[in-house]
Length: 423
Image (tube, rainbow, N blue to C red; front, side, top):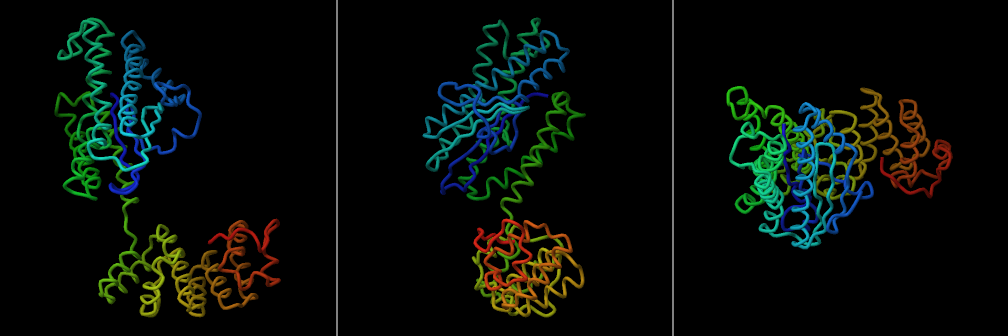
């Protein structure tokens, strides 16, 4: 199993403020986004902060012992460490030339370069940063191999000296692997950047799924293809990271059912939009990803008109979705209906969230005593004290916060002037 490299795309779409990316090398293929900022750098190299985790050192030792702990193993570990640093330095230097600030980090099975650009980078610069690491890696490896008397085009079995074989693997071979056009390798990110020219906004999705498909095919072929026989562990590791990236990509690009319903309503097909909204609130999967948008009122007007026409009985999915629908009913001025809906849900499944829904509806109606009673019920059902205090001090409780029964429920250190938090 040998290191591979990956380039992590910007956090924002092309054309917007593309401010950060990561190029990962060594045993990389990782998605850590804040690792470089979590500790002080061990040293600086040509002005770049270099963070070295204990895991990097541990892995190099393991790499040596996995290879019999002999001369070849230690040469391989040292070569991998050295080429990883050279690889990341190349990424960082080109990123600096493009006007970005860069940081190098070395972790367990991972080396990566994070860079921050104050302006969107062009495709040529993005590709140059992606390819700088593996091309420098290969060139340096070939040069060192020649100096040691080796031939880059020979198989390592032909090398008598262990150090020559180690450099052959750690240099040209690993560098070439990083050019394979699959994510999250450097070659994959360069290919994604090129593909974005023809499939704007969809290139990353296409490459993410294509990369998983290619890697699965390679893994299946390992028992039958001699050239892949020794790569089974590496390919399997690559696939695991790709699947992790795939799930993260799906979560990042997912469109909420509520947003879909709103978009449909804006096209004029309200009947279909209402059906989509009913299905969304009736599903068993929580709509947690849509809470911020809905509670911030981004779709308030359209949602209110759609909810007003939802067929009775209102949809029921799980307590999270029912609580969200309760809030939307309150926000649309239908607090009494919201209270009845939440109370019926509590009768079906007595959860803290359902009780909080009734309490919020009662607060919107100005009924402090009923609000306090349902908040007490929520506590009895397991609502944590901090969440109760956050709800009591939220804008939703403004009309009843001064009621003695509501105040009696607030925990120590909580006051009506506490910073509001939505629950």
